[in-house]
Every structure is written in structure tokens, then in C-alpha cells.
Length: 529
Ligand SMILES: Cc1cc2nc3c(=O)[nH]c(=O)nc-3n(C[C@H](O)[C@H](O)[C@H](O)COP(=O)(O)OP(=O)(O)OC[C@H]3O[C@@H](n4cnc5c(N)ncnc54)[C@H](O)[C@@H]3O)c2cc1C
Image (cartoon, rainbow, N blue to C red):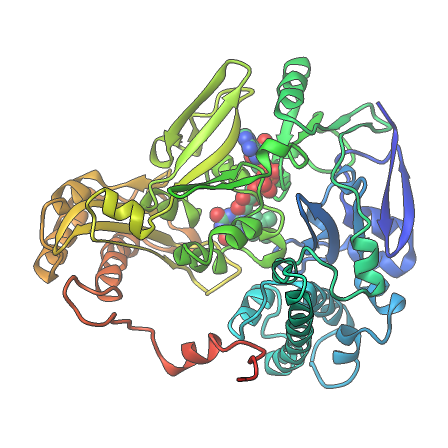
């Protein structure tokens, strides 16, 4: 057991000794230097204190924007943190600093720091390539209290310059045949002070840290070590992204020993086969989207309404499922995707469909000491569908909330239909925010199987949904029972109207406007040769 660890803070090695296992980076920074005093006033929802975390994730290095109030200190061991102050002082001429030096952004200096940190992550993101993704970068953080068009304009210029750099690097790399390392961000194409330090980071190593109050923080590297530790310290809590800090009695007093899942290799991998993905239980929501979002568009769509990028960068799929929030937006989609949860403990392994993983009243089937090892999501490629005799699969999810982002949703519906020509072979109809756990509506699914997918079927299904779905959850944000019941039907109607019917020549979309076409525009257009 060690009582110290080091991490890099704004380019300097920082040694931490006997610091509380449950103390956050925000409170540490506030004590460290008066220039960080503002980190003391932290509110994850209204005013997150953003910093950039440098990490080594498997075979790639990444800058990830995170909330310092949601990072426990031992999570930082062997990692790198850049504060907005550090970014400004280290390279005043960095394109991100220059972009926000002049211009009227109509916000406080602290909010501008937040914007700089968000833009810094965006600048190095290899997947940020289209205009529409700018919203994804700033949503739920940059609010009406700032001049959003001006921020957007400055950001677009920064992201376009980095995209141009990437295209040039890819052209050079073509000669040696390794241009894919440019597009996946495995290669340092910037060669600046920040990336040079990032690319020197070691992979997350095992850590056994004890604080001044004898609380322990373990960071094992393998499943075997994890299960052994759990046996030895049965009262210790598992911690993944740590965004549900309430679970761990965060603060300087109290709190149990913690076993972090962040460095466990088996929980941090994404396996892609021809017919499924298996996402490790400790893979973050952002990383999951990077792996499956291109093929599974509905996943990206749901994530855009889920918290904010700094939260998604830390929250894991395993942590999301274990939290079992009745209104969580991902569960209905995972059900519609026919996903399964794989569990592991010292007693062995088992798995269950997502719908059977929830046990009502905020509970799950997880037993003490059991870990979510992974989530298996079937891939519905043409080949996979044709081997099942299915001609097409429609799948989508819809969330309704008081605002687009930054608030608890009222309800979410996730729907899927597998069609053999015009006839429905199998249906998935799932909701969250209606009952005390996310749920599937079997009566509606059974009714749909074997019917033609047309307006008559849709209308009859509405009647079944009305009869069989009972709203038992007090509505978030003052939603009444009657309103939630109405949403059950209208979300399903939306699914019917926004997808092509079998036989229709081109997809109909209620939202396909010119605006959307613009959002799809890349920042950088390859010159035609
Ligand atoms: C500002 C903010 C906004 C949010 N907005 C939304 C939202 O819009 N929609 C939504 O659905 N949720 C939202 N959340 C909640 C968020 O989804 C959860 O906090 C997050 O998913 C938990 O994941 P984590 O990896 O951080 O888990 P942790 O916080 O690390 O852990 C949470 C719990 O899960 C257990 N656990 C974690 N991983 C595993 C595993 N692999 N096996 C077994 N047990 C495990 C832990 O022991 C702990 O009890 C929000 C949270 C915050 C802070």
C-alpha cells in the first residue's frame, strides 16, 4: 500500500500524499493555489468546473474534458490534467487561446474558461469532423448566458483548422500506408507541447493507495485481481466513472474503501465481431459512441440528450446500468437493440437481457460482489438480417424533456421492428420514465408480431398501449400522470411517422429540413482532383 501518488498538473509533476480517497480534484485545486479558488464552488449541473484529462486508453491517447468536481483524487494517478489557466499560460499562441482572445462572447471570465477547455478537447478530437457536432461539444454547458453564435463561429474556425491539418497529415501518411493512424488519433499529428506530453503517458497502472484516514483506493489491472480484492474487502464499493458520486459518500469524512474498475483490461475493451459488439462494463459512454455510433445512429442520437460531454466522457455503460435510474434514456434503446448484460463474480458468469436486468424500484439483479462485465449489442448488418430471414430492421428512440439538454427527461421510448417484407416478424416496445424501472410492453410487442406495418396496425397498437401501460412513476419536473400516459402513445406514433413504411420509395422524415443538411457538412472539403 502506498500513501502517495503523482499526476501531471499543467505540465508539472504533482505529488499527492495522504489526500482523502474521497476528495475531489475541484476541492484539491481550490486549496492548492488562490488562482484556483473558484473550483471550490462546484455544481455538476449548473456550473461544472471543467479541466482536461490526458489519458492513455488502450492503443490511443486522448484529451477528455471532465468535471473536476466529479473526479476523485486517486483517479488521477499517472494521468495528466490541464486547467484552463494552465492551457492559457503554457501556450498563449495556441489556436484555441487565440480564438477567444478577442471578440465579444458576453460571458464572465470563468465561463470563458469553461469554453476554452471545451474547445481545447474539440481541437484534438479526431472524430469531430462535421458542423453538427459543434452542438455536441458545447450542449448543456454553454447556455443562453453567453453569446452562442459568436462562440460557435470561433469554434468552427478552430475545428476547421485542425481538420485541415489532419487531411494534410493523412495525405503524407498515405505514402507509408498508415493514414488510418491519423484518422483514429493514434498518431501525434500536432507535435505541440500538449500532445508531446500526452503521448508520453503510461497506460493506467495498478494502484493501491491509502489515505490519512486509512481508507483504501484500489485500481486493479485484471478481472482476477478485481475479484480477489472484492473477496478480501467485501465492504469496498466498485467505482467506474464516479459520476454518481452520491453512491460513494464523497467528501473528506466517512466513505468506504473503493475499488476502481478503470484500469481492468477486460472491462475496458470493445470487441467487434460480424454479428455483435461487446462493450466492456467500464467503457465510457463517449468511447462507446466512438465505436458503435456510426453504425448505430440511434445510440448517438440518445447520447446527444444525455447529460453533457464532460459527464459522458466519464460515465460508463456499466455504471449507467448499475445505477438503474427509472428515467435513464439509454435503457429503452438498449432493449430495442436486444442487448444483453454479462455479469461476473467469484461464483461464475451469467447474462440477462437488459429488460430482465432491472428488478423494479431502482433495483437490479446484481448480487453483492457481482460486476457488469460487458454489454452485448447485436449488430444488424445486412448479412445478420438475411440469415434470420429479415428484410429490414427499424430502430429508434425518442426522449421528451422540459428542455433539450441539462434536465431530467420526462419519458423515453425505444422501438424496433424486424420486417419480412411488409409483415412484422418481431417487435420491441420499451419505455423509461413511466414505471419504477425501464420496461418493455409485451402486450404491444405480441400484438405487432405477424401484422402488416401500416397505419391501421399503428392505431390499434395505440389502443393496446393505452390499456396496458400504467404510469406509476411521479413525473419528473412536474409531468402529470395523464401527460406521461399520452407520451407513451405519441412517442410510438413518432416512430411510425418518421420511418419509411415497407414499400415506400424514399424515407420520410418529419425533421429532414435544410438545417440538418448543413449540420452534416464537414469542416473541411477535400479539394476535387
Ligand atoms: C451532471 C449529471 C447529469 C446526468 N444526466 C443524466 C441523464 O441525462 N441521463 C441519465 O440516464 N443519467 C444521467 N446522469 C447519471 C449518470 O448516468 C450516472 O451517474 C452514470 O451513468 C454512472 O456511471 P459511472 O460510470 O460514473 O458509475 P459510478 O458513479 O462509478 O458508479 C455508480 C454505481 O454503479 C456501480 N457500478 C459502476 N460500474 C459497475 C460495474 N461495471 N458493475 C457493477 N457495478 C458497477 C457503482 O458501484 C456505483 O454503485 C447524470 C449524472 C450527472 C452527474
